[in-house]
View 1 (cartoon, rainbow, N blue to C red):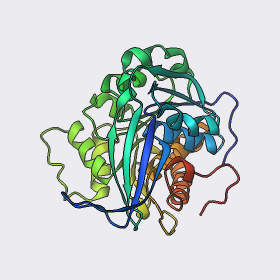
View 2 (view 1 turned 135 degrees about the horizontal axis):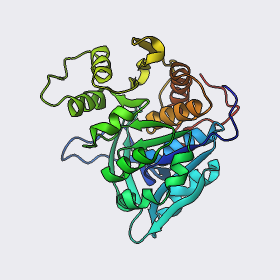
View 3 (view 1 turned 45 degrees about the vertical axis):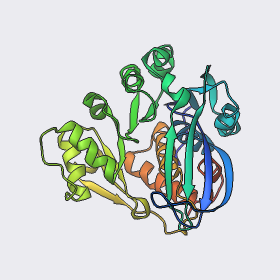
View 4 (view 1 turned 90 degrees about the vertical axis):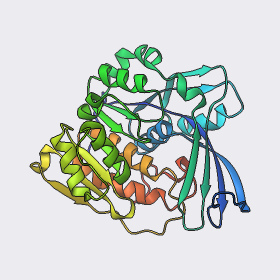
Length: 310
């Protein structure tokens, strides 16, 4: 990793949830009841996960978000506090904290239902109160678990690089996707993003990943990182002469894939804030994502500075 300039700052504008994590042998089919092995309440939310992943690796991170005034707020913020994330812009609103109900099967694959709760308060009004912070950030990180107008306002106010993780996919202003540097998406999200940018064109599921990435670049996206789980990622940017670089993922035995994509995004953002190029940042991020799938839960599975990465 390269040296972090003192002024470099990652600002994550996003969601904070309490994850209710149930481990089962198999995922239930529609209408089916299965017995779970155990239940844990863990910190989560895509925004909080990404902030924790970056901070644990040594980045200076501030978080803009909201929690409710209920019993889940402490669980939702415990990982952020432990990682040393600046929470001066975290607000408490009346009502429930965001909650994710996560089922993890024996093969490590998960299914997730997210109830936004207080995350719905992270709108343009709340985000706009932190214009100076966003203008000063080296990297601003956004995801799809907050309102559209909050995402668009954060992108508008960002003074540095904007990392957009379009997950879940929401109907955001195409200008935000074109501003992304990079746009980070998995295979499904990449197709949906291309459809948002090229309405009426054929961006069907038969397109190969490389074709989708090329289409996103032609549609005006500055750079793209398409994550492919155990297969690693594809990186497309000007620094690779307009081509696509395949970044491999280390081979590991997956215990729980929950939050692995967020570990990738957080590590990527932190490394970009340090001044690394996108391909090098993606190589580190792939190793961090592989580290994360070897442990249970999202934030508890993320590496810290000094941990040996695969």
